[in-house]
Amino acid sequence: MNKKKTIIETTILSLLIIILYVVTFTLLLSFSKSKTYDTLKSTSDIVQNIFNGNDESNSIDKLNNTFDENNSLRISIIIRNNDNKYTILYDNKKMYNAENTPEELVNINQYYTRKSSYGYNMIYYTILDNENGKYYIRTSIKESDTTSMSKNFLIYGSPVLILILLGFIFYKVYEYNKSIKPLKKGINELKVISGDTNIENSDDVLILSNSIELIKNNLNQKIELLNEEKEKTQMVLDSLTEGILVISEENKVIMFNNAVKNIISLDENYILDKDYNLLPLDDDFKENIIKCFKNKSDFSFDITKETKIYQVHLRNISIKINNENINCVAIIFFDVTENRNIDKIKNDFFANASHELKTPLTSIIGYQELLANKIITDPQDVEKAIDVTIKQAKKIDEILKDMLSISKLENNEITTIEELNVKDIIEQIISDENFKIKKHHIQLKTNLSDLIIISNKDDISKLFSNLIDNAIKYNKEGGIIEININSTDKKIEIKDTGIGIKDEDQNRIFERFYRVDNSKDKNNVEGTGLGLSIVKHIIDKYNYEIDVSSSYLIGSTFTVILK
Image (cartoon, rainbow, N blue to C red; front, top):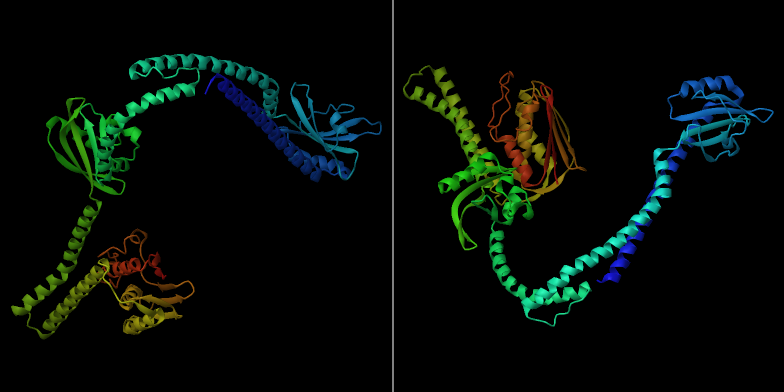
């Protein structure tokens, strides 16, 4: 680049600015006028529809009811008299002083602009009445500020802009001359440093740049060696999934890796050499950093970032910077989300399982002790104790079977898949549940069509067996169950008229051991709380979908969408 090229480029840029300026305000002027014209035209059409020259009095009354003085437009009905003079019959602004030959009345169906007596421009649009050609419908509006501004900017602003840009061109030439002087001086100094007196010195920036490049190359060789070592270290840090952050005793961030940027959602420029107090860390976290500096001791704690849980280790270290040992704190973030979630699931599972098994076991042990100690001797009481014991033992067996099913589903154990007809499976389940259906006098309505899928038979049987069993158990005495198969959309709908599910319970019904509180219901249905959990596991296993729609004390509808 040289002085001539700088002048040419600056001149071209100035011309482009002028063109852009003119085009912008021309378009703005055109848009503003177009918008005004559209308003005048549409209003004239409205007045045309209201006014009828053959029914002058009634039409003016309608206009008075439609337009008032507060309207931004002035709307006038003007009649041409036999002496070719004009009289204003109607004016929403109550301005009845009509000129003898207003110019806008001559320019029919055209837009006409003239200055009003108040000093501002008015835009007029006049049409003839369709019913009687001696009536003129004139609409006018004050020229918008946008239109006036655009005109003024085009008329007065363009010369001013040209003068400013000419000044800018002269300024750029002056700045070029001024900026080239220290550059030329620096080149002379670099000659001495490099010991190469053959380096050319010129007013051309490109030549000066090439001269600097020669010296820069020598220095870059040394810098590259240092950068290679730095990059190796950074690559190792960035390859770690654990976040690493190092803070100096001056509270500056001096080292980090990519994992930390993701954890605290910051870019590199925001982190490096910045005060760590600017980082989005809570007060407890910052207090722990202060303690680590003060006590020179290591410790750990957990933090939560969005959906992630991190275990944070703080370690006091010493780093040599500029031949000086600096006391620092190394902060390491370990993602322990999965471990913590697994621990919670395990704890919840064992707590729920223990609770669910404890009640029937207590009942079994209690009755067996009564029988063993012959406290119960009456045959009827003995028979009742045995029945209760067997019932509770079966409940434990049912819980264990359901827990085993969930375990197999969670472990993704390989199962045999085959071609199945969902209709056949549901019909078999209905047959197996027929006794319960009749016992509760439930009316069963079915609309079953063939639906072929590829899946494991036991899984699909458990899926619909649990849903149908719930529809029976939680139904009302003499209630209704509807089972429909839509083979086109691969949808299976199981609808009941049972006790329904409260809104607050619907988000939790698929949790293990979660049971809706039906203690107030006269049937007080008992269950393991694992049936719908098994359903959800099967749904997830095959990427199916399930939709639940329920109203408390009205009924529930479970819709399974197969793929």
